[in-house]
Length: 184
Image (cartoon, rainbow, N blue to C red; front, side, top):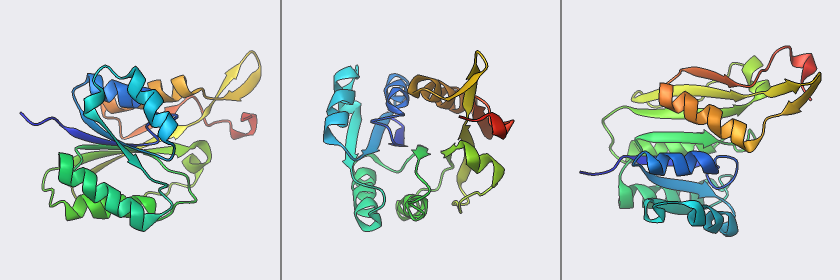
């Protein structure tokens, strides 16, 4: 039986625990990252490194991103699950991911978990997705500890993303985003 294929954007850094969790859940995982050394660190932690493939690319370079995504799809099939933490400076990255998924000829629904910075909670912007895309939002907030606010740790972020994926929530706030005036 063919394994499900997941794409994790940011899966060698902030979302590396998510990548490892997906491998434990039986996925083949394609990971977009910019640094080869982070990919090697991830591979050293993986129980099944053969289920992880690297897509070394800066997602701001859309032509290269499109080519690398199509290679990953050719090797492992279209994506059943996409988890993407993409900075707002890369406005074309999500359309390129959706285009690659469309070019794959996929007919079945897939889940797209869009990880967003805390301020995005107040703008309510949703990217264009394919009709077969189940869109989910994950907002990364902050925590208040002992009267002081702080940003989330990588572990807290990963745990929040894994919980959202596990439960299939349409919208998740990891930490808190309100009251905004208390953010760090």
